Length: 386
Ligand code: GLA
Picture 1 (cartoon, protein in one colour):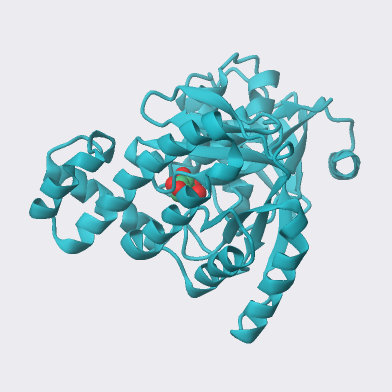
Picture 2 (cartoon, protein in one colour):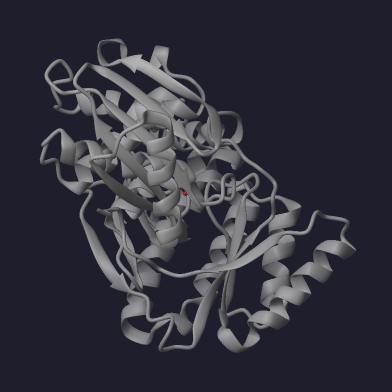
């Protein structure tokens, strides 16, 4: 962490030739359970992880915004008056999209000063760990501070989501930015995506001797194209056919009636969302009553639902989950939007190295590229660094 801060400060100085006004950081996230429920206004239970994006920001006397990062060669420059989704492309759409979205949600972009931003991150890209939300959330808290906007964190999450939806063009929900902004150490964020009320849930991994392993398949996914948007459209169709505003209004008890109304594919999409919402509620209750060692079956059931009903898993993710389950994991599931990315396995610390060896062996046997496996720790949300 301190290394990244040093690098970011140095990168900022070298490029812009002056000292930044401050530095801010925001974490990636992993979703423990509650997949494709956020845009259906349901429940999610993600946590912020110990991988962060750090930014340095300096204010300018003119109205120009410049963004640069350690992962791209170019410096992207735009006049604040020109900020609009149509003018934003590539990686710069994340930070500059946030500046634009702040204007949409109350900031007077004609009255605020321009800025220079330098970004660096150790959140893996494409692994389903929300490297994009980490950038958005870091920029959102930074601009909120230096522009004296006093927006609260749920509003900042909405701003990050708006940037992602309109400037980046990915029709994603509110989960990732909420986790990045609201996370706390050793805890998950239980979010009601309709009311936007959230609760911090103690995970208790350490006292239970458990760790959460990420198995990153290296198969990259994009939420701006293809399957993600298609699944979202199926959910919206299902809600319309059932005569409800969103699938949040459908319960497990309604499923027999839904089966009679919906075609088979739409029914299975709906069944995933409805049962997944129930699994989030059950996970929260189980964590509170019995602790993390008792949530394994819920994680396993979530994976089956995504594999069979929502159909967003891939062979590499299924193999990761099955290998974890066969090698001592308490529970395992794919995590994130699907079609690639990572699986998670909740496992006793003592069984961890055995599982890592087993996963490497299983992937080699199937001729799949070696996955990257690493433990993540529930960490603090976005914050000012200096
Ligand atoms: C991606 C999106 C989230 C959420 C998940 C699926 O991570 O960014 O909003 O929809 O997929 O749960």
